[in-house]
Amino acid sequence: MLNTLLKWIAYALVIIFVAWIIPGITVANFFTALLVTVVLAVINALIKPILEFISMPINFLTFGLFSLVINALMLLLAGKITPGFHVEGFLAAFLGAILLALISMAVERIGERKV
Image (cartoon, rainbow, N blue to C red; front, side):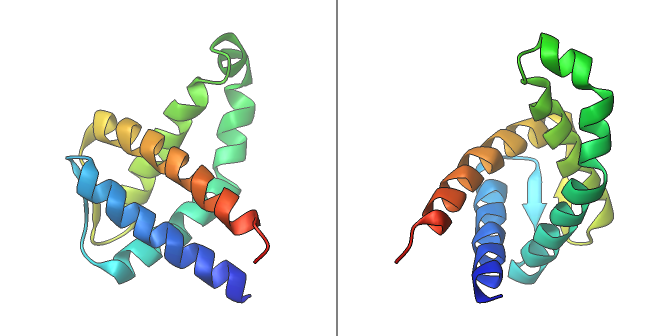
């Protein structure tokens, strides 16, 4: 339970960092970033598997790079749903999704280490 809470706090900080780096993505405050973390977790659990299944042929042809487009669409959807979090257009969502994926991989690797 504590590990999950710490991961969500880390992801909220990552979302704030992505909003700071990528022009076109804004987040109001830390609590909004925590809410975005929860919304993205729900979206990724419910909607993303359906989109990935539907787009499997194009994902196969692009060697998995189409997954970045799906991640960008999930970030855009989170921007529409979450108050205080705004994503301006597909390019900002695409760049934000790439940066979010890269930093999230690092957070996952750190979380795997036993201290």
